[in-house]
Image 1 (cartoon, rainbow, N blue to C red):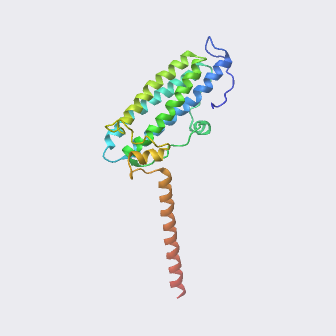
Image 2: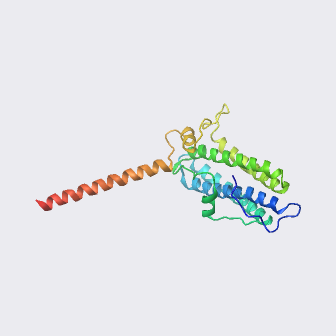
Image 3: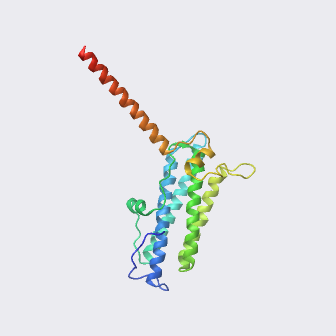
Length: 223
């Protein structure tokens, strides 16, 4: 469901202000999704490791730049419709309908397994938005279709690393990012949750050791 937006004071010729509001609401989540995707692509760019590092690391920068351009186009369309595009992190987090990307430092292929699911989600939502926009505003429909051309091409690039000679995808049966990462590169995926648990466990061990040292010191003093 798109975030609710006030009816604009004006909109583009040919649309009523209420129709303009509907399109603005539709575009708002698309803007959030594109901004989130650009950040996720950079996160992966910084956290890939392993033999495929350089290939994936360098593949993602052009995708990030193109997605940022898509976000810019969506934001400018919102402005043209008489709306107010919100590009702040707070607005994104408050209004998005999905969680943060969940894979941290990991093998490049593991990241691509998870990224494939990210692209599937945004492409499916974009297609739904295209259908709704087509009923109201063909210009916004055209804009979103143009986005889809790029997004689907980028997913193809990602899937080329996951596809076997028989044409099946390594992460085909996964329905979570963590599961897709593990399926794509078994034993080499590291999720943020796993990393957090390891950090918490390590801190707990340090605390225990420090407590043990203090106890020993106390005993020595007593003696």
